[in-house]
Length: 143
Image (cartoon, rainbow, N blue to C red; front, side):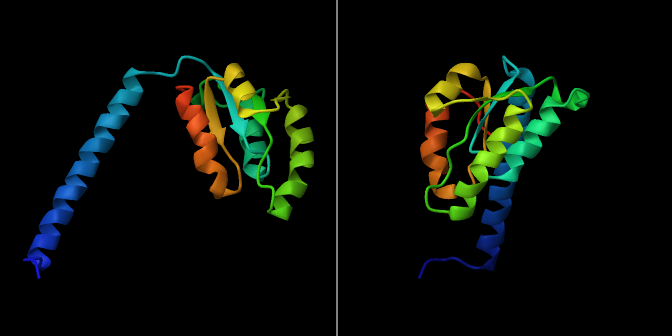
C-alpha cells in the first residue's frame, strides 16, 4: 500500500483548498475586468417556477439596480419529455412570461441569436449538458 496517512491527507487537502481559493480569486478578478457586453437574457426551460421568478425579478419596472438592467427577452420552453409534471407546467409558464414581454422561440439556436447571456432552467438535469454545450459553442455565458 502507498505511503498515504493522515498527515499526507491533511497536507493534500490544504494544498487543494489553497488552489481552489486562488482559483476563485482569479475568476472574480476576471469577471470584474470583463463585463458582459449586453443585457439581453434568454431562458432555456420553462418547466420550473424559477424561470418565471427570474423573469419577474429582472423584468420588473422597478428592478433593483443590482440587476444591472438585465432583462429576459426570449425563452426556449422545452424541457423533459418524460417528467409529466414538467410537461404539464410549460403551457402555463409560457403564458406567464409572455405577459412580461418575453418572446418564445422554437429552438436554442434561435434563442442564442437574440440574447447575450442564458439562464439554464430546465428542470430535468439529464438535458443540461446537451443544452449547455450549444450555449458554450456560441460563446455566451450560461448560468
